Structures are given as C-alpha cells and as structure tokens.
Length: 156
Image (cartoon, rainbow, N blue to C red):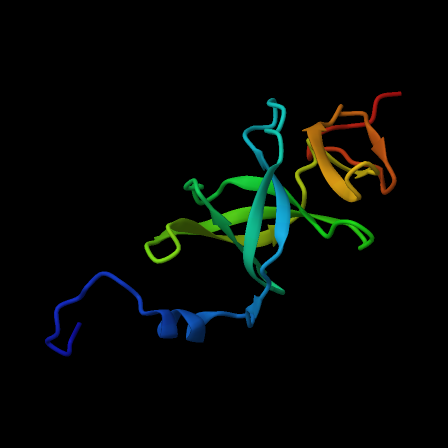
C-alpha cells in the first residue's frame, strides 16, 4: 500500500503460488465426494466432480456449486482396478472461475471425522469403486479398530 498504488483487493496468482507450501500437480480425474453436514446428520450422497490439481497438502476440485470454507467431506481417490483411497478434506477457499464457468474449491487434507463411516464397494456391473458414506454408530468397529469421537468412553 505504501507504493501509492490503489489496492485491488486481489492477490495475483503468481504471489499465491509463491506462498504455497506444496507444489501442485495437474490431476484432471473424476473423484467422488461426500460432503458432511453435521455430526448428527447422515452425509449427503456422494457427488462426482473433477479434480483440478493435487498436492501433498490437499487438492482442488471443480464444482458447479459454491462450497463454503470450513465444509468437511470425504473424497474417494481411485477407481476401477486402482487401489481406492478415502481421505478427509476441508474446504479452505472457493473461487468462481469465469473462464471455466465453475467454482474451484481448494481443499486441505484432514482426518475423516470419527462420526463418519466411509466404505468403498466394488460395482462389478460398471467396473468401478463407489464411495458409501454414512453416520457411524458410536460403538462401530472398522478395520483400524474402534474409532471414538473425543470425549467418548468405552462402555463395559
């Protein structure tokens, strides 16, 4: 601001890139995302969206709809014969891209919330894997052992 130039209120993409901790890699893949509303609500049915890029810190998605910062979700990476990987994501920012006519949703990697069960099933008919996300019973077991939300104790 001290340069005498008026501020546009925008950060140029080059300065954004310089501030990034992890390099982005072009990754134009279809991914399934189940957005999580609240601990006591069943996650919405997964949406199929296109990834824009990916990094060690997260991924960017292309979406027709705006997604608010702070929104949590579960994403399924991989399909078909690839190993399926589910990861938790949290929206960091969402910007509309006039050129693409889509929102670019920047997400960081987070733990899948303890109150969500993310299961991957094989759809043999279509030769792909599907993400099934639902509310986790608080005494549910999974392959990694019993996951409990903080503050929960095991009953005898």
